[in-house]
Length: 381
Ligand SMILES: [Zn+2]
Image 1 (spheres, protein in one colour):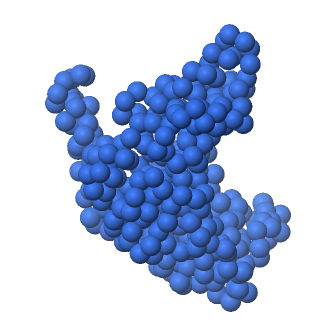
Image 2 (image 1 turned 180 degrees about the vertical axis):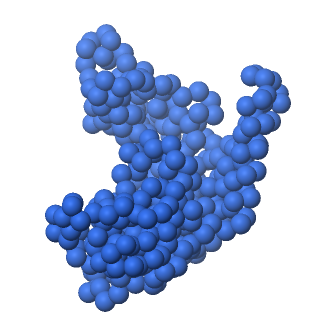
């Protein structure tokens, strides 16, 4: 399991100059390598590979070029270019808008990477080869072995380091307790324990603020100074909203992993559901996929299991007797005319999800095993 840690860096003036120089040299190399690929193809019909260009870089370094920059950082630039070409060819093949890789102007190249070595983390000090030892704000401990180190400058001119580390997964324990999680239409989630989790009020408030700012932006004239200001405001608020949401999803995923050994989610086809207008807002806002992802990463560290099950029928089926009780999205309560069970529709769904998870992901169509189609009943509301 890989984890990315993002820490603010506080370089001194001399170090900042070195960082700037590195970024600028990388940008220069990127553009040179792009021009080389373009020319080789247009003039000689030669398709350059990463290996070709890496060999050329070695020769350049021997000639005394690209001095003062760590070799692997430069190689990573060539690898990035190679990736964008591969993506370009994939898009061409898929018949999509191809978007040929672009030359990077000043300010359009913002990061560089130490792909394996050349950096060292010691407490809140980060040592970068050819740059020096820089103070960082380490707000959490880095677990596992650090694989890559990327240095980035944001639009405000702040410097960050992104460390990607890998932790070996703990081998899973035999699950003794299980919890089913249903995506709520009204709340974030409904749990088979009978609880629902609502969004905190500050998040809802920030979201409203964002909607106002977006409306404000849409009224501004294109190219005007006011529009630029409104745009910056939208960017700032949406960053806040995202930050709040991630923090919240971290809390909820921790709560889920703490609450049971087996956590069962619906395997929603998110892209399919986004086409449905009524559900679209909830799915995207609630970042359902992100919650599952956070839960999976926490579970992997704790030796717990996350199971994704087929969501078909989970909201229609009665969690007590198994009969199908059709209902529209507007019907909030599950009322079973067969066994009399009456409960919140989402809690009923989460109980079904839990049952499916306990059986393993092998899902069986309830209409063929538990009830014949002729036994289906209409909801009475
Ligand atoms: Zn029933």
